Picture (cartoon, helix red, strand yellow):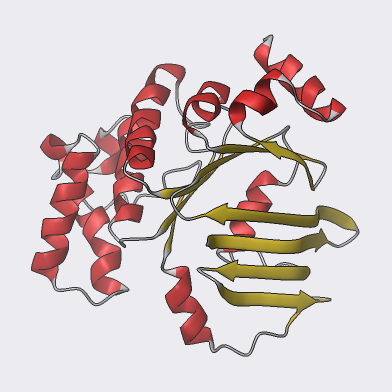
Length: 254
């Protein structure tokens, strides 16, 4: 069963068409990497799934429930805002920038959403937060403030924070692009571990090695359209689309 499905997703910013009829299905437990040049619409596609961007037209299903059915910007879905908000809690998201609260410790950052959004008891939230902070290799840093952490450590806290909401799906929007090269590996390792555990992941990335190693499927986007999708061994070795071929030649030969 598809846990994410989009049909003919379009997003316009005025005259600019950022997404053009993007249709994609992601199965439960699948890792899908989205690659392509800057400006291809990758991040906008990802942000459309959890309504950080409002689509112009198209349909979105999450966990087999239709949450968006738009034409000319008008949503024809009759579900209440509360029902849709509950479904969206099933998606955790990690951004390029870590967006941690600077006045809160690592532990407080990870605990915050389960308590404030889910109404979880503080003791339970603290227990879950500690487990997740240990999982991302930062047990010794739980009382530290973000300013005292490296970029890689901050991004690992951001992943723990997203996991604290116990999502079914994790969305990653270029999670390593703001990091110094030597810090990229520690974040990718956390993501690899999540994939091994069966987490459904949709990852916008420039890390071709990660896509090759971890993805079940790789999607290539160009100028707002999904041009090609295939298993990584197929897409990287013998892409069918000329644009895919040109892009891979440019990024793999640099």
